[in-house]
Every structure is written in structure tokens, then in C-alpha cells.
Image (cartoon, rainbow, N blue to C red):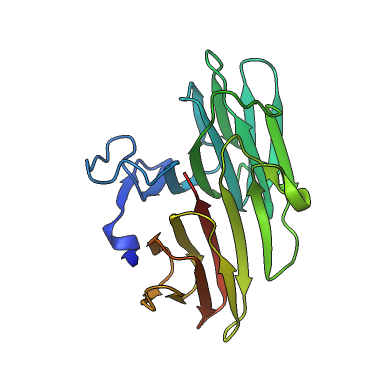
Length: 234
């Protein structure tokens, strides 16, 4: 089954220095039916004004994946770790108890646009506190996985995150390991077809789709498309 969640249905925020769209309950936006999906707790797209920052804050035990779409971000923690991430790069923070984290738009004249995901972390797994990768120029690559296969970022959870970059008319079929997955259009229009249900959903820019009990998904781009497929066996 494939069920769409359009960008217009998502929660929003506009604080001047921050503009945001929330797929799931976050901050002031609360929907008891949308507290996350399997181990995916947060899926936000946010724009920080030039020079703006999030002050230090603590997190639950999650892996925080930041995908920078425009600009430059700096992430610091109270232990002295720091990582700078430019457009076309991604960073993964393995949050720890009693450690606070901050985020800064390092550009004084350009907004910072990024996607942020929170994924529940297994209590018995530990990874490097910060990881970073440059996104390859590829139709499809593995952005994050439990064991860091093919140079992907390593998660503390059985989740596989696929990054798709398709031209108009291109399509790709991907196996889905678990009973649930989530497809997110970062930009572009896409048709998503499930192999079991044979259901198809059309997604526009910023739309997402809950995928349930499908063992394969065919993604077809009708415009230039950039998307994430988050495969969640748990």
C-alpha cells in the first residue's frame, strides 16, 4: 500500500530567521496520528536565514542526518566536536545523553537549506560521534546504512536510506527489505509504483509517501527529480 502525504498537509513554521516544513509532529506542530513512522522520528526541511543558528540543545537517543541542499552549516557539540557541511554534502550526528548540539548557518549573505532526519538508535550500538560524506554524482547511491556499506554513513539502526537523482523519463526499481518505507521528493515530480499492490501514487515537489508491505518500488521521474527512499525493517 502507498499513501501520499503532500507538502500542503505538513506542518509549517515561519519565525523569520527560520522557515520549516514538518512531516511529523515537531516543536509547536502536533498531530497525535503522526508521531513518526517506524524508526523515523523526524523528517524536516528547514531554511535558516543568513547567520542564523540553533542554540545548543539536547536530543533523545537518535541519529541526526543533515543533508545540505544550499549554503553551508556548522555543527558543534559540547564535547568540542565540530563538522562543517557544504551544499552537496551530508553529516550524521550520533547523539549522546547529556551532550548538547548547536547548528549555525556560516554564510552571512546566503540562506541555509537542508533536510533533517532523526532515526531511533539502538541502545547497544555506538558509532563515531560525527560522520560526513560528499554526495556522488549518481542516479542512485546508498546514503546511509547499518554497516556503512559502499562508503555510506553508518547508522545505529537497521535502516537503509537511498538517494535518487533522476532525469525526466528515467526510472529505477529498488527492493524494500522491511514492511515499511518512506519516499520523500526533495524536488521534482515522481510516480511511485508498488510491486505487490500495483498501486501508484504521483508525488509533486516536497510530497512524501508511506509505503507498507511492498517488496519493491519503481520510481519514475516526470521532471528532474531528487528524492530519498528510507527503508525501515523496524
